Image (cartoon, rainbow, N blue to C red; front, top):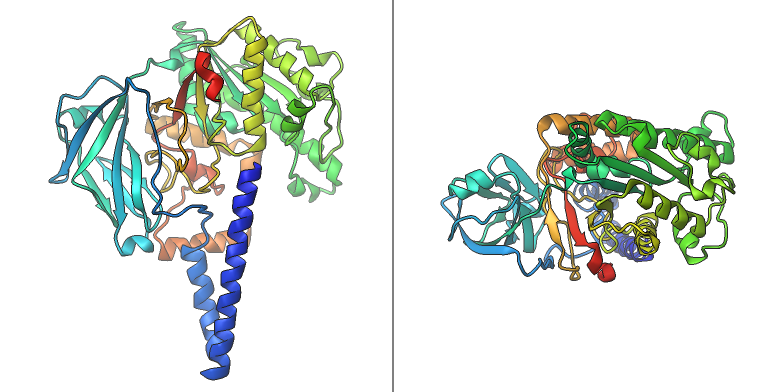
Length: 479
């Protein structure tokens, strides 16, 4: 977690504690001046209301505008939202990624139920009490849009009479040689299972050079679940690291990526930022104390520089990445978004890859950036699984990157859910508190969760869209 995210979470908790204290004082006053039995009677509905409507980690006002800027060459036109249809004002420009910019305003019920916009057979959800500029994803619905037949309606929110349509035209990057950087096992599946399984299919038909998945860490921390097997903290961390190492090499085969195209570097969780800051120093696992990454590399398809001494250092990480770039020669690299994704390992992973590109004889052309986490909203993408992915909150201006949002068929969505179900870190049952909260939100806030798995990522990641920011690496100074 980045320092900014930690500050936002700390401020959120402080505000909650303050409001809780005020509420308790008011209840005490009611007990003294009105009736002693009134505070305990009000405590239960108060707690239920909190779980139903105030338990989200939303670190901004729903009235804030999102701020996106697109490349200057992006085609755009004003459209009308009349008679329940999106009506074009000019012929639809060529492009597969369609983004509709508009102002959404919540209705009164939209303070209690999630406001959402229904677009044809798609649904995209937004913050309760929304009142600001938002961006809908119309990708995959170009045919209906071009015929002025794309239906649109707001539920628990009001649509404006006009909106601005942005059309972004990209080549199919899945047909190019691709390297996917996953800071942890499951990051590749969460962000890009549809993309890499599609790229693997093209590779089998010899239409491109294939896809490589490079996982940077073992993912060994937060191993309390494995202590129930009678293991101490260090042994539990080692077991979890072994299991997630296996996940990083085995699960991609479900999407058609052979083990010969999967590499596990075996560094340790939450140590990547320190490794880059002091590249000559070795940084052991925080939980197991291990200092040799070579055991995690036993099944790698090629030797790498850090195999010589096994030290978890920034110098070795950069040397490994340079060797991988020069061996696999990717035209496209897929990596975490350095401005949007707050996870410290994700930020450092992208920084390491960009440093390696500087040092390498091989220069990829395109970076596809993804965000598996956000600074400001832990529920994005909002709404049920299987629906579309609207653009995430961006409260400060981002670099004017293009967007690419390939669509996933229902069959690929099921395969993606099963790939997530194989990941050990996404298995297990919810704690009782979270299970009760979901029941309350289902009954009172009409929220839905999929049957494919209990972890929140089964709802957030299994969608009809995947979303990537397209950054030309020769312009990467803004990263």
